[in-house]
Image (cartoon, rainbow, N blue to C red):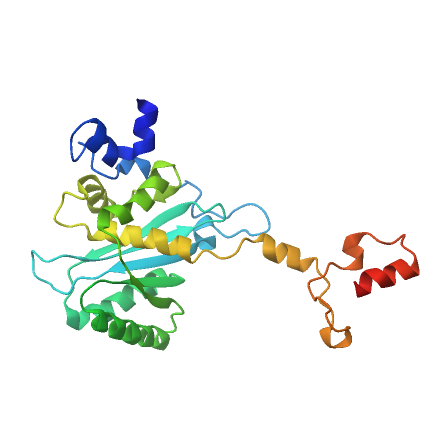
Length: 270
């Protein structure tokens, strides 16, 4: 039974095994799945690259927008996630505030400038799509004027909130997600984790789901590509015969020092 519960996750366990739509600790998440940041997170690392782990992360940020400052309105939320070389994810910043349309771009630009993510995703829902596209254009202009190189892009969503949340929940349950549990934003984030999807506000979870997906979507090719490329003899393609492949392994990498001159010629022209 325990193995089945692990496979199903808390939401399906509560619904299918316990006949309860929502488990006591939350329908999708448990805050305990989010590991605290390593104690060495901001310390220099041993080896060639002595930067801290935080400084080496590839970071993305995702915004779930609302457009009102009213007390009962939804929040505008942004979650910043860093990814290390082992694809562990680190929730380093969560922004949550009620913002009116008039100040939305400036407030977003302020937070992006403070956190400096490499890629910024802005959710495009079913409504106000033209407004979002215009906001992205204006936000990109403001950031460029400030000298902030973050790339801003719209992200269309076509699945419900609970389905989207399964991605970060699965990764967190597997021990692949860390969070700054001592940050001022953690208590409100933790409460929303526990209440999702029952609570009336789920803006932070939406932003977490978007940031997790964006981090995976923008993952660069494996580092081994560049390592292999470094062992290839690029040479001057203009001086080579037609059909010569610039990524062909060099003779040295083929260990052909004992080949005859004719064999070397055949290898070069192959």
